[in-house]
Image 1 (cartoon, rainbow, N blue to C red):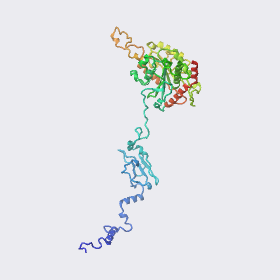
Image 2: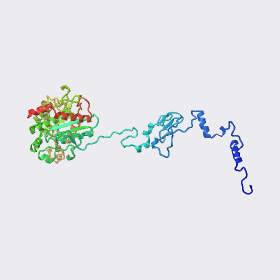
Image 3: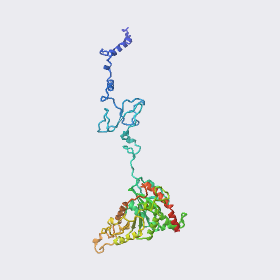
Image 4: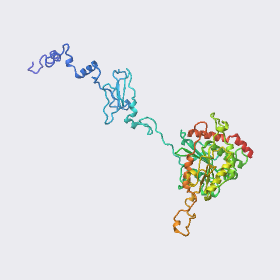
Length: 506
């Protein structure tokens, strides 16, 4: 049968299977592996290490910890493994920050690491929570929601305040409050508010531009407060209407106003037949009340009020200042009275610092004798005023008069002299000996005072260094000041004292 090619009996039958089972039991060398106590000799090494770990816990721990360098949602799909949600977790999960270059690997022998590692034992049936270190992961920088968010602290960075390029309206030509300035204000209390008033054509807008953001050598068409153009000067008009607002990067708020008692505004009302408000019957009464409202408003919301005049002096201007002080609304109490009429006692009333600026001063005005007379006149005119017109500004501190001491001016007021802007480039001044000697012709002409650029810089430094008194009974931020000023303007327009004064004028 075998010779004819057929298989022999037992080659693939039951006998063959019995011989294979026998070899598995006795082993290839004939040793008996099926007896008692022999299973451990043939056990795989991995199982032996695992059982040895269970028998002797401690430093012999060889189980590989689960290391999560990224949260599960950010891991690649190929590296993610299915983990049953109800699988019991007998050992703690070690969450380790991604290893940095040049640093040793964190320990895994049971010691608690000091930095970059979070060890947390989870209860049975719970999934591991998101580790705290994830905000420090380098891989999250590409998935940051915005460039303004710091990946280390997870907070938005402080952005610089928006820089203004030109002034905007705070009060328009209809004497209506505007809210466009709110977007430029911050929630901080370190601010200074400077306002200015003056007659028509005295240079208010030019001075405010030079104090805030511009230099004398710049083109006047680029000033933040637009000055009068040549066409407006020729027809005797006014450039500023209402109240203009500008805030610098140093958080100084400048308020430029339309001219007080302006003849051009009165002429515009009469010639254009503009309808007056019902409480005013005459155009000149309406113009005067507008001026008083703006002056009373500046007295309440400004730290410094600059009064500009281009010749010394107009007695009607001081009478106007005292009238506005009389009609000034009381400082609102903490009860937030919208009318602004209810306030504390007179002793706690707020009054700003007032500065008298003599613009386009002549050479003889800088004479020490004339300067002393001017201080005496202003002091006598303002002696009954509650406005702070003394002790806030001094020309003697600017070293304009090097030979004069502080005791020379017995009654020094906040008076500052400013020459004309065109005096810096005027070469037609008298030069000593210029007609006879060519040597003196090379020297600059004697002006009798410092240059306009030098004096405007000294004025700016003194204005910005003035005391910043508290405007109300509570400390105001920039945004709170804006709402406070809106309440004051509304209270000024509805003031019973101003209405009664208007009735007396009619």
